[in-house]
Length: 208
Image 1 (spheres, rainbow, N blue to C red):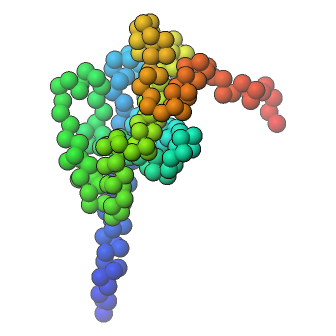
Image 2: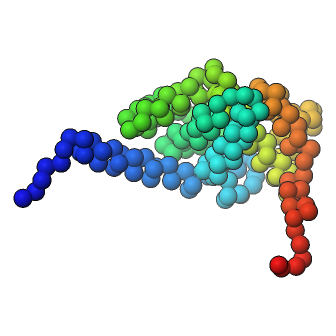
Image 3: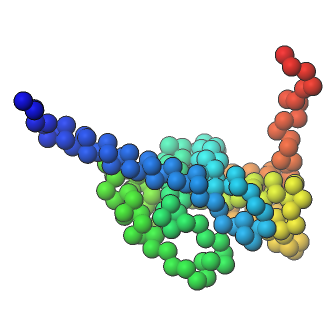
């Protein structure tokens, strides 16, 4: 005799399947390249929406601590900020001129029926860009771009320094995009720091 599942068990089972589908979709961000590569003239296959999101989240956590904001909320905003691109894909500044993205519809479809409504609320707050946490998360997004451009500049790219310094017209040009005090300070430090400096004093010629 087959026992009927209780209503609560059915609900939990349905929720788990819904969450599994969501996590599979999240996984596709590892395979989606960021499309500024077209105009930066760099074929960097490691620069995906997922790899970008990872560093943005860590930047956001540090900024939240420095700015006295809620680090949990900032990190979640950072993790969700490009989630819609799993369905719309990434678009550079040329594409944006000709393409309309139905961001509200995508967010509603992705998160509106999510088992935990908190994700939808956090994503909505980020998009409104009114709270302290939302502003910090956007600063984190922009800071990761400065880091990436600095790395490309260090590798010898000619396009990256043009972006970083407004084609030589404005040193530290992207600092002005930062809205928080901590974001501005960190942006200036990134401009001045060498991307390979993190391993100075760490490397050795000898195995242990």
